[in-house]
Image (tube, rainbow, N blue to C red):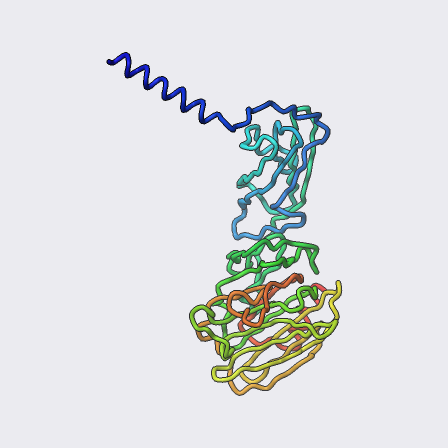
Amino acid sequence: MKILKYIIISSLMMALAVSCEKGIDPINAVTPGADTSAPVINISYPLEGTLVRVPETVASIVILCSASDDIELKKVVLQMDGADIASFDSFKDYRRAALSYTYDNVTDGDHVLTVVATDLSGKTSTSSVNFKKVAPYNPLPGEVFYMPFDGDNNDLVSMVAAKKVGSPTFGPGKTGQAYQGATDAYLTFPATALTNPEFSATFWYKLNGTPDRAGILAICRPYAVYNDTTRFKGLRVARENNGAKQNLFVNFGISAAEVWMNPFITVTPSDTWMHIAITISATKATIYVDGAVVKEAPMDHAIDWSGCTSMSLMSGKPNFDYWNHFSDLSMMDELRIFNKALSAEEVTSIYQMKK
């Protein structure tokens, strides 16, 4: 009986194996072909011209890069200022390596990161970026937020990074790098330290008219909590089409009413950078473009920030999108926020910094 049982079990296993193989094509080896191309390298961070600002004398950075080859990678080497700092020769995907490496010895001054990738046939590619570690930022009088967008989304006053939604990138800025908008992309940042009864914001802006409307800067109450379309709280900066041109506007709440400055300028989209400064006191709001006053509005109440806990950059989302002011594909650079209403002289000074 025991022998018969083993025979039956063995027969069933063979039958299962045969049935499992039915309908399945055999696996055939495929010749990879000739190795015709050298590896391709992409460096995501640091970018060319990145400025590293941290309080520490010696900083750590996370190097992000990738290398790919048409046949197979053999080795990827990271170099800092000409010296090897890391080497990789084992990859989950033999044709592509996505690498993240923490380098903890960045001193003040100029640096060159070089990535060298070699494939199995010995072809080698090299890619380099120049970046710099600079001294900690010294804020201007009354400045509570400064984001230069030089290869990262860090506020240099608090040394806190904005939360990134989607995949915004960086491009050539008014100075160094600048925020480059993308579809369904924007930044958010806690607004607690930014909401003062007196308020100013300054930034450089290069307008892309597509899409035909978008949010630029919004400090609002959470829409999911308050369902707030009264706009009696917080501040909104956005744009909308006006034929072939764009109207840029500011709206803010003063407790039981809202103030509209719409438009404060109407412009044709172009590759020209413009400098925008918004200053709000308890009695007056003033908007400057390229250092000149373009709009003023009297006020009988200070701006009301009740419940405004976060700031959105380059989109109305998530709290000011009920009129389809979604992500802005324009560029922004040198964003500064102050806990006071800037004077005309201060606006001119900031404008002249990067003119």
